[in-house]
Image (cartoon, rainbow, N blue to C red; front, side, top):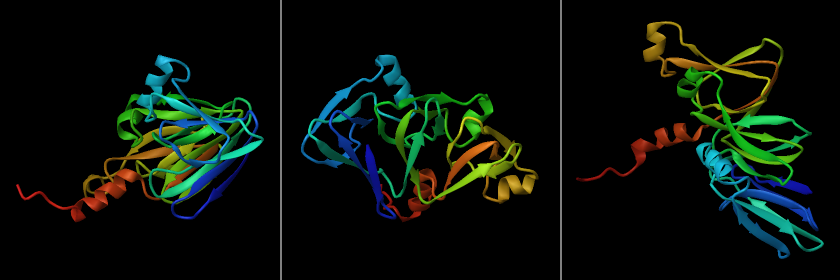
Length: 227
């Protein structure tokens, strides 16, 4: 399998397949494709796996795209402005990502739901109750809101992040929350009461414009009801 990520602000990924190779995506994830590609929509892993995917932000059904010609391609695009990231995963290597980040992957990659280890991080960590986890071997593609900044954290190194800006991280990274110090900082700084803490070792990917933040910025410009 070969691929090319194209564009700058609104990227796409073109995946080239050889005969018999397969990639899968959530329902409605494909933008366009060449002739010689077959589609098979299915509940990969059964009903329980499908319900878990729904809880993590994906669809109940997934669609396989298999090359039935000598070669062919399929193009996938993200839902909002941002970056497409390719994760080239080896056997049993995993990456944890925010809800709705998964785009598509080789058939050898496993997509499953991931839950936080601590109850507090579920409610105050800015990433929701359930996350997504992809596990290799194979290539998986994800979409990140806005621009992306990647850090390689060393053992014990910590980043404090405004909730919602965490796009992905490796399982070796400890994901937790910490309270903002000082009452004035909590209520007047605009950063809220809690910050997300990421402690190494491992890689983390941060996003510059989380979709909920963008939606909040747009509210003042939306037409108001006259009722």
